[in-house]
Image 1 (cartoon, one colour):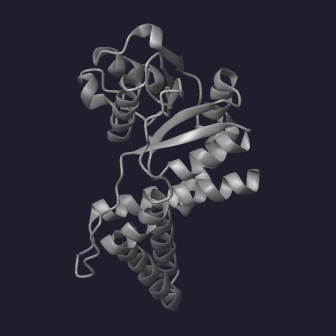
Image 2 (cartoon, one colour):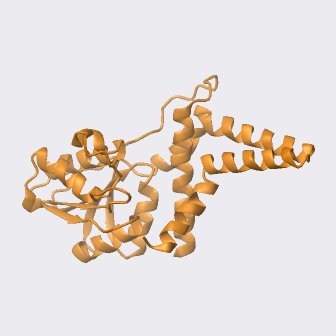
Length: 248
């Protein structure tokens, strides 16, 4: 696997919620071990504070809302003949049925792509995504779901080698050039994806799906693992947007 890709993923882990909380907690334990009690208290308190903050529903909802509100639901346009569905991941357990192997994000993206395809005559679906640590690329898994749900094989285009959104955009450009096309991905991921595709001189039309934000702001809600994961998703995207801007 590409060293730069691994390095990027490693750095990302340590600045995202889980890596940040664990790192500060480990630092606190180290200070405790060497009897630097003052620094230990600061580090352990900070790790606990970040854990509570990232797990607090109104905070995670705030982070998500700023991402997911950027693009409205897709309005069908019969002139857009290419529908690019970005990969969303899957697991490697071959004993599970297809519906269970695909991640929630992948399933929602594929379903949205199929709905748009069914409402757009003569359109084609583009599926991208590499295999990661599994034996089958995400692009192939997503295409298989589309096939069993009635999409004809002739209307499916696959690129199983794209490792990230940047490479997915590179592949799509070889097909659509500067023509308008539909871009399907999770609502949290859409701002970064649109930025990457537009940076390549392309003209995507956003079709966001898999929304995670809540319409309610109950400040009396208790911290939860669900909110922690939502904070992680949002911060991952903010970091990706920052990296995209720096990369140009």
